[in-house]
Length: 114
Image 1 (cartoon, rainbow, N blue to C red):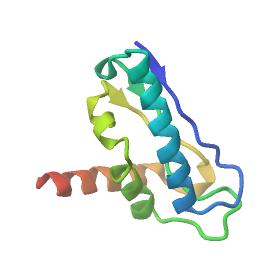
Image 2: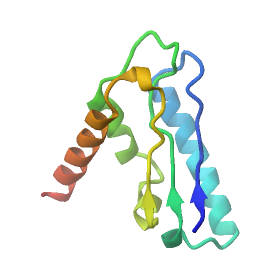
Image 3: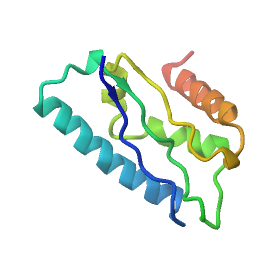
Image 4: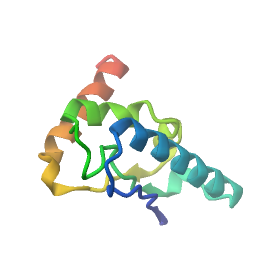
């Protein structure tokens, strides 16, 4: 089973919005290439980076702000087709990834009406 890992680096002082823009472009290019090569998305595991500000950014993001970004990502429809997806843990100094994942699950459940 292919594991697809389009990583956006945490180096720099970019904002969470800039990370979102770059991640969106990277995922678009990755999924375009996967489809062009006839990779069946339901048989891949996607391992994207979390959308976060750069390591040297002046403003940090809270778990809810980080959790919200993937749900608006252009790749979210493609994400649903994948066998699974696992976020890279990223910069451990940012705090609890458990809080971010819990916020993602809560937001997804609200959008589904659960």
